[in-house]
Image (cartoon, rainbow, N blue to C red; front, side, top):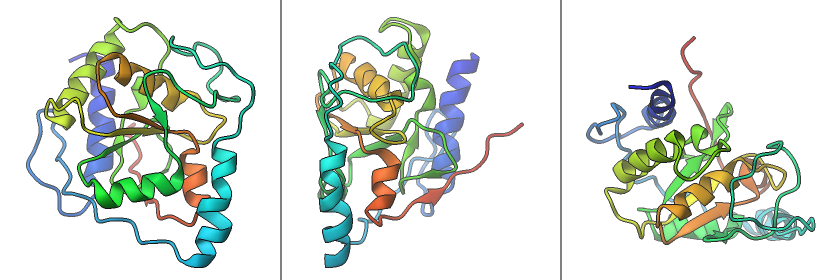
Length: 207
């Protein structure tokens, strides 16, 4: 097993092992999660000052052109306001998606100390390169496992904020594999927390 695949395995296992009520083991050695409970509905004050008020920022147009190729520059910086082969999803839409479609999968491409509840680790998928490199092949194997081969499962990718390209690259990679419902949560964990939504702590990788 090569180093890149081991990183995918740890990313999935570390986040999933932190979840209660895990189910059977998958071939990566990490448990598949039980369907995550729907996040609590935000109250009126949260909607007024958090979710709804923040969506304008999540869609902010920096004048950066969307591109079909993987981003090769700095991973922190202004991002496009659209993504080829996918769609942007905002905080309120993500809350609704998780409530109504429990099979939707959310992928953390940041690898920070906190994650959205039930998120799966996919940090290596942010890497620049090509759509036929080793990262693409290993990411494809990983997605095949967690989606059970269903290309129509909604896949949500996020990282830090509208100033983070990591989840953009991961979403492009997934779209190139033929997944039909690729959703880029451009606002990232910053928008999620700003809207008053819960997060979970993630285990630290072994030294």
